[in-house]
Amino acid sequence: MTSEQGASAGAEDLVKTYGSGDTEVHALRGVTLSFRSGEFTAIMGPSGSGKSTLMHCLAGLDVATSGHVHIGDTDLTGLSDKKMTLLRRDRIGFVFQSFNLVPTLTAAENITLPSDIAGRKVDKDWYDTVISRLGIGDRLDHLPSELSGGQQQRVACARALVGRPAIIFGDEPTGNLDSRSSGEVLSILRAATDEFGQTVVIVTHDPRAASYADRVVFLADGKIVRELPRPTADDVFEVMKNLDDVPADDSGSDDGATSDVTVGAELGKHESGSVAPESGVGRHAADAGSGADSTQAG
Ligand SMILES: Nc1ncnc2c1ncn2[C@@H]1O[C@H](COP(=O)(O)OP(=O)(O)OP(=O)(O)O)[C@@H](O)[C@H]1O
Image (cartoon, rainbow, N blue to C red; front, side, top):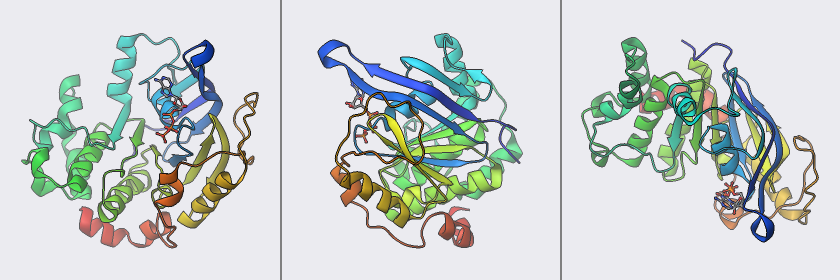
């Protein structure tokens, strides 16, 4: 089974400026980026580099100052609020750091909530496949408060996957999880791309989390400064360290998407200091360890 065939998303020369005059902040300075169908991308960068702004603009949660965003063949520019709401509901899946489950609904009700709101019938076979893969079959009648953080995030992943969106955005999806639960959730997102052809984009501060992705896109000062294909946690850690080592360079006139240029940026402490690089984690470990992951997750 695959998600929407040929679905992709992207941004073209995306600019986002907050405020004006003295309080003007250039959060995005011309970002061009595309996401291939079935690809898992991690977005990283120093604190304040524009990661959340980029994700919010890509996901139709915020509107860019200029430039274009497309989800599949829909250009988000100029969409009415109503059409944007429908696009988010029907074509985009979300996994948030804080899980964002409705506390009064069971896990099963949370998972089908977007479809229920849309008045769409849930594909039972697909639902069963997702539940089984995520290993939450025995938790479906529980309220979120009766689930561990890792289980809640698996429910959130199921909710995102069941609607077969064009793309799933994860905003620090493992930020509130211990390393074991993080590994499980990342393996699920990895499997969603490998097994289901799902397109996934996450923002993370964690090199280990980024190592599960097909590529890492590094932002600094509102621009793409580097891309790393098939990253290991060590690779990611090194790039971040180099970003940290080069003096800041506020070249606001940059024309946007560059993949090989490293510009200076100051990494937030939590990014450079919190995660020790680990060899053998991430994509390769996920590939090799999918049996163990699926034992845990389904
Ligand atoms: N609503 C807003 N009003 C004004 N400035 C904002 C707003 N949201 C973000 N910014 C600014 O835009 C820049 C980019 O912020 P953003 O949150 O996208 O960065 P980030 O890379 O996600 O940071 P972090 O890793 O700390 O979450 C920052 O300078 C931030 O202060």
